[in-house]
Amino acid sequence: MENVSGYLHSAESAGTLDGPGVRRVLFLQGCPLNCLYCHNPDARPFRCGEKTDAFTQLREIARYRDLFQRTGGGVTLSGGEPLSQPAFVKAIFEGCRKMGVHTALDTSGYTGWRADDELLSYTNLVLLDIKHIRPENYRNLTGVELEPTLIFARRLAELGVPVWLRHVLVPGYTDQPEHLAELAAFAATLPNIERVDILPFHNMGSYKWEQLGRTYALANTPEPTPEQVAEAQGVFRDAGLVVF
Image (cartoon, rainbow, N blue to C red):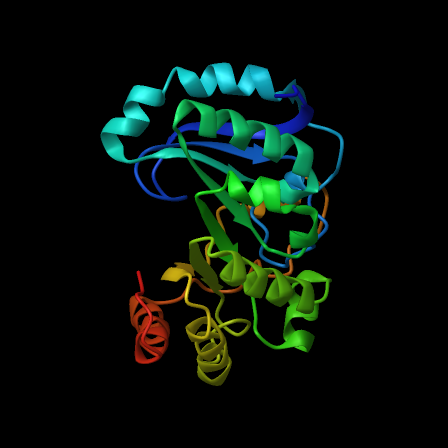
């Protein structure tokens, strides 16, 4: 296999929130979206961060292989948007496949067209974040169009790639019951959706916006209450989906 260079924002050695088991999470640099609630705005710029290569990262991943096997874990590539560096993702996932390490791709799906079928053949799980189901709301929230993400979701279904659907619950932005019901109805048409994760919005990344000298539009947005989270989860359960 080919060694491929890439740009890394940061790494987490024992993540438990981005896929099954204990995972090594690599946050790749570069993202074309401008999400209002982004908690890693410093990961957006392209071709900066730590320049590295796939073989270097695979050697590090190999150190944790026993832990991955004991916990049912593996490697998650997140971001930024990992599909901003598809060749780098493919090389790491191909190496993981050779080592028998589980792989997960944490993506918005907006650049899903950059993931060719070979890359997806090395992908055990996609964590797909559909941020809103209505095009205008999606554009206002992210600055880009919704349709590419829906196209990617349908393609993953056709290929039979397992998906954990993720949705960040932001009061006043992504928590309208009718919109959640539309998203749930769409998800219910995809037979490869294994579960839905409702992720409560938080403000822990607001300091990064300040450090970058940028205005954080959601600085005064409250976190959803446990009751609001439970209500959103109920909408997806009513559509017949497994929800966490």
